[in-house]
Amino acid sequence: MASFSARLDHAIRSKKTPALVGLDPRWDQLPSKIKASAREMYDDPAAAMAAAFEEFCVRLIDVVAPLVPAIKPQAAFFEELGPDGSVALARVIRYGRSQGLMVICDAKRGDIGTTAEAYARAYLAGEDPHAAPYGADALTVSPYLGDDTLAPFVKLCDERGAGIYVLVRTSNPGSGSFQNHTDATGLKLYEGVADVVEKLSIHSENSTSYGSIGAVVGATYPRELGELRQRMPHVPLLIPGYGAQGGNAGDVAAAFDAEGLGAIVNSSRGINFAFRSPAYAETFGEKQWEAAAEAATKAMIADLAANTPAGRLQD
Image (cartoon, rainbow, N blue to C red; front, top):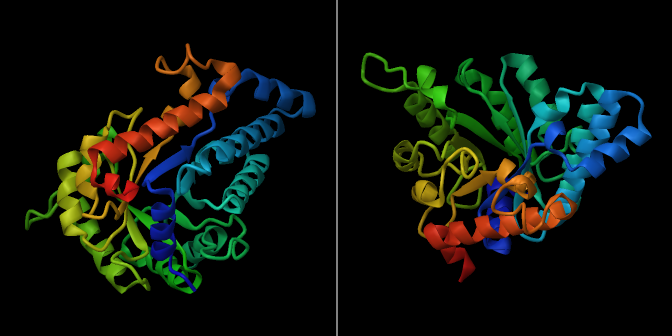
């Protein structure tokens, strides 16, 4: 069985980029034709929205699958719609995997004991997409109930060739209110979490320089990102905050090793709804939203290649 880190490294090398496309379907920003088609099929608003989300994400996957190694569907947008949304999420994940993409479900789960085990079994399929109902390769996880909450996820990662990304230093402006809390020794909370993640990743099964226990570290805090890369040398990083949230390629450069590996960089809104942005609206418009998403994805790939060690993947 191939470990998550080995499969991810292979995917990144194959596509020659660490670009990660987040799938964040938002009803008010979807192309009007997709919304109209869904309304014609379903009278129930939640069912119509779920159908529109699924169509949008599937078509977006078709655009980005030849270009990037992985996608990251945001579970919250689907779950807001109830059962119809949850079914659409599972279908989107399975479709992404059928197109050869690694899929990281961004659900930020975290709980104790048997509840954590249930979350892990629900989402973490690992190498075999049919091993879990949602079928994801990896899952984002919150550690703030304690390190014992991570154990069930880590166990399943080893058993199924799955991965997790633990929230360490998130990209939102208010993250410091908790994550910067300092103990009597001067250790910040996010640094303590990082130390736990590094130990777990060292002991996770893998055949690469990195384990299968990753960390979420935001591009919006580039100094901390560089420090955490040094603090967690065996941990694969998932970096949100690029693009629409203000982070740029220079901000994420320190996350990579000399070969351009060790991190994936996420962009969601900037690609999903590129047709609405000033950079692409005039050229493409809503009728060519898929072409706009393709152009935005290629621009991100080029930006990371030009301004980070990920450019070495192009050689």
